[in-house]
Image (cartoon, rainbow, N blue to C red; front, top):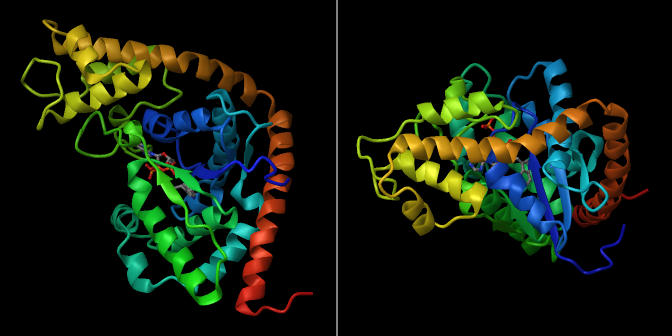
Length: 333
Ligand code: ATP
Ligand code: LTN
């Protein structure tokens, strides 16, 4: 498939490592749906990244289907976008070996995600966890992506991707497009229990996050319990981390500005605000959940997407990989 329309290209991915949260949705997937008409987009389920942390095989397999179903249920069109599974396109790991040889130990040691995940998984600090960013760089560079829409936590990985690409280009001449991060206002949704920390799908406290598959009662309950402050005015201010986070969530779901939100809740307490956030969140997720349930009953349809789209991705990937192999001096047969 040629990029005949000369559209800019986008690449992004989600790991099938847990139930997706509204952080993944507002920070990444929701924005992808607004880009699909104007860009040529590749959206990957990065299963090879997920095994850098120990996974139960049956769960990993189920979640890979689930993420594809969520992509579609959130409004991504599998005819318009190349939506596929990372392990179905071997060029990702083939390129990542080469890029490992152009990435420094010191660079990988500075990655905050590596530091975070190694402290959380102290008994399994494996080499894959360490070289995770070079596989991510390969995902992006393989497709000569212009833009990478991600949450704020991934900015450092994209900076590293740019450095690796520039280093390779400076040795071998123009090979890789230097990608830009695309980071929007929902880029950092924080935990409902500890609002200074990122909401994470792997948080052991289920009250810290809202899963895309939580039902209405659970969602309302989780927002009701959300940690706030002892003040009672709904407004964005320093130190009001809990309320600031709820305002970001409310704004992402409703499109309202901070001023509009402040006005709406003038004279009302946190209880009313939390209920409103819970309600709008549950109402926005309901149609996604319904479509998700329907898709999960049709595995054959999802498998057909896996197959057709991985072939399209592999076609694009092969071009960059053979260019790289030629440049580094591998014999072509
Ligand atoms: P984990 O929490 O298990 O480490 P994760 O949710 O951070 O996983 P991914 O599933 O790979 O990791 O993330 C997919 C996308 O969602 C990425 O673009 C990431 O930046 C974004 N994202 C993840 N958490 C948040 C959040 N709390 N707020 C905004 N964006 C987020
Ligand atoms: N590292 C990302 C997931 C990811 C990704 C990518 C995102 C893997 N490869 C390529 C954008 C582009 C994460 O943990 N959120």
